[in-house]
Length: 304
Image (tube, rainbow, N blue to C red; front, side, top):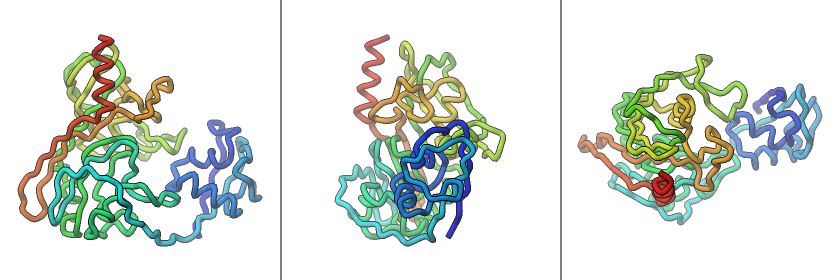
């Protein structure tokens, strides 16, 4: 059994215990944390507490994480927008709002649940919870994702990602008008010390992160940009665009509070290219922007 120890800081003082725990970057859902709280596996100042307990700055928190139990991931008949498929690879256009793979407390309605229903031959390199998953995109980011059907394909695609030879182009609607036509953001990304659920540009425990961008269209108070990734850090485009003063529109984590969108952030993985693991042919896929993003762009044009 693993013990996680944390201290309540000023930023989360006064929150309910279950909500406070979600402010840290823990690999567990709020549902899972609430379950552990109800079982007495979460202690505040060495005593079990209820989910409704209001934490105070300085409180010592102990979370007793039980030994991992293998999840049973059930196939679900969830429609998939499959762009390409053969015996080795599937390319899927993921909608905004869909989580890529299960995690503790989240067992259903993910892309993996849908893939298991669609086909049973997925690679096992990433374990039972992430069969076939070579790379991820955020829940509220839409767009193209490649999935491996066997270990040979998985190893090949993973190597291409590590070698930075995979083509990945994202389209993002960002706040403000970017005056220059293109740019390169080279800024290391690591955990935000003030909020463990967020990333930030920092020199502390950070990794190299490089994003190239090109202006596609300007609006009165916004810009449509094309972003090409040289690295694949968590929330990279969202963090980098916020860093240069142009956060992604609708982003609940790095954007403006007044701008929260039910659609999520206006960020779409539009283009994906890689060398096929078996045939060695270079495959390149281009997807349409989601309807919600097109509608938002039309609204911005009307304002210009």
